[in-house]
Length: 127
Image 1: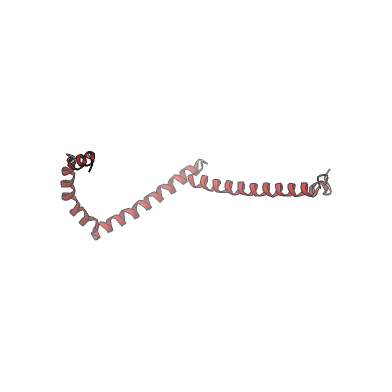
Image 2: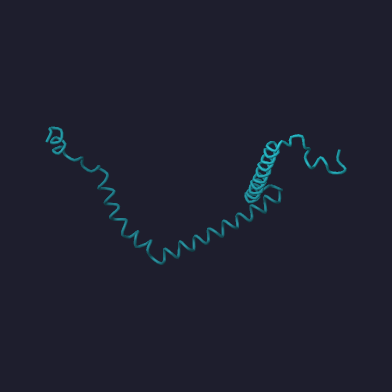
């Protein structure tokens, strides 16, 4: 064995942090009753009831704020979400039409039909 390895084995291990026994003592004191509480039917029923109550209150607040905002012709978050969805759909359609137009232009360039007028220019009533 080298001297460095022997020295590493004889070096004392660092002791536990000074605060660790305090935390372990608190943990040992608090954990059993806390586990018993969260595993009880009363706790589950209470959490379930409070969750339902929170959902009802949130929906009521949303309805009332929507009514108030619409009263002053202001958009709600739902209105903005719907508009964004419509805008995204419209952008996708424009992108598809643009790609199709580019494909048609490339096709006509390949076929050598550069001098041909578009079909819309030949409709009656247009000049």
